[in-house]
Length: 230
Length: 320
Image (cartoon, rainbow over all chains, first blue to last red; front, top):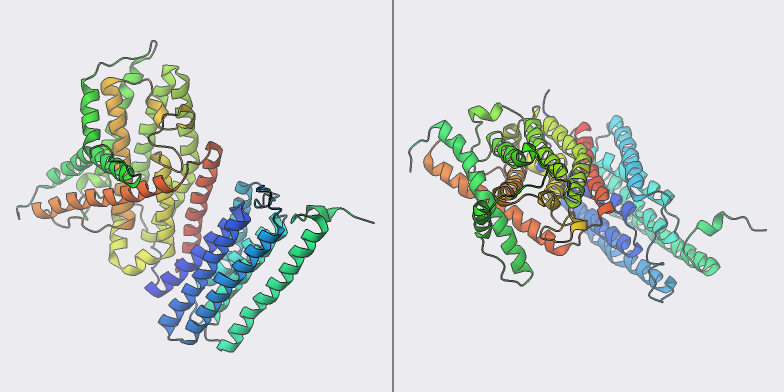
C-alpha cells in the first residue's frame, strides 16, 4: 500500500488548526461547566484568528490581518464578556453550583462523544466526496469545518439549558467562519465583516432568550418548556 | 572516536541503554516533580539504590502461590528487554534483529508482560493485588482500540507498520511533522502512555491509598528480588514507551546513522536527554492536574480514542 503523501507546511498548519478547533468543539460537547464552555469558546475563536493570520501570511492577503483582529476583538473579548455577565446575573448567587453546572445532558458524556464521532464522520466524508478545492482551500480543513457544524448541532440538541445552546450556536458560527475562510478567503473585507456582525445579532437574540427564559422559570433549563400549559 | 562498532555490539547497546537508563529516568522525573512542588526531592540515583536494596532482601511468597508467581517478574522483564531490539533506540538504520517484529509485535510483548504480572497477582489471593490487576486489565482493554488506531495511522503514513519506517518518514520533511494525522496520533499515543505508566490524571504514582491504585497494587505480595524485578520492569516499560514516543513520533533526531563509536555514544546521550524531556512534561502534568475518579478514566480513554480516530479520518480524506 502506498503511503499517503504529506501536504505542504502551510496546508499542514491550516489543517492542524482546523483539527484542534474540531477537538475543542468536542470539548464543548463534553464540558459540564458553562463557565469552562465559555473559556473553550474563547480558545476556539482565538484559533480562527490565528488561522486567518496564517492564511494572510501565506497567500498575501493583507485584508485578513484586519479580519483576524476584528474577529479576535469580537469573539475572544466581547462575546465571552457578554456571556459571563449574563451568567453572573442569572446566577442565584448563593454559592450553589447548580447553576454553574450545565448538567443538562440528555446523553451521558461518553455516548455524547461517540455520537459526536459519528456526526463528525458523516460531515467528513460527505464533504470529502464533494472534492471542493478553493484557491486557499486545504480540502481537509473544509471537511473539518463541516464536521464541526454537525457536532455543534449535536451539542445544541443534547443540551437542555439555554446558555449551553447559545454557546453551541456561537461555535457553529465559528465553524462557518472557518469554512468561509478556507473556501473564500479572497472575499472583500466588507463582506467578511458583515458576516461577522451577523454574530452580534445572534448574541442579542440569545441574550434576550436567556433573560426571557430566566424570568419565566427562574432557571436556564429548557426542560420546563416541554409541558403544555393552557 | 571513529572506530566502527560491530552491529551485534550496537544491538546489545540498545538493550543495555534501556536496561541501565530506565531507573535513572524515573529518578529524574521524581526529582523534577519534587522541585516543582518546592521540595528537595530524592537523589536522581535513588531508584538504583532502591533496586540494589531490594535485591539484597529476603524473598517471601504467599502460601499456595505456585512457580508462576515467582517466574512472572522475570518473564515480564525479559519481554521488556526484547522490545528495545525492535524499535529505533540508537540507530536510524534497522538492525538485523529489528525486523523480528513490527509495532504490533512490540505491543504483544508489552501486553504479555502486563498479563503475566496480572496473573501472578491473581495467584496471591490478596484482595488489593487482585483489584489492581483487574483494573489494569480493564483499562488496558479500553486503550487497545486507541493503540490500534495509532497503528493504522502509522500504516497509512508509511505504507508499513515498522517503527523505523515512521521515524524515517518524520525525518524526511517538515510537512510530515506538521500534518494533522501525525500530530493527532502522537497526542493519542502520549495519552495512552500516561495511562499505561500510571501517571496523573489516571493514577497517583507515589500514592499509598489502595483504593486509587491500578498498576501499583499488583506488586503488593512480591518481595525482595522479585519486587525489584517488577519495579525495574515498570521503569523499563516507562522508558520504552517514552523512546517510542520520542524516537519514532516526536523527535527522531540525534540517532546514529553510522556505526561510528562517537555517533553511537551521542545517540545514547540524546536518547536519555529526550526521555528526560518527556519525563519533565509528564512531571508538569503530574503537578498541574488532579487525579481523575476511577469511573472518569474511561472518559480520558474516550478522549484519546477520539483523537486517534480523527487522525485516521484526516488521512482518508487525503492531505491529512
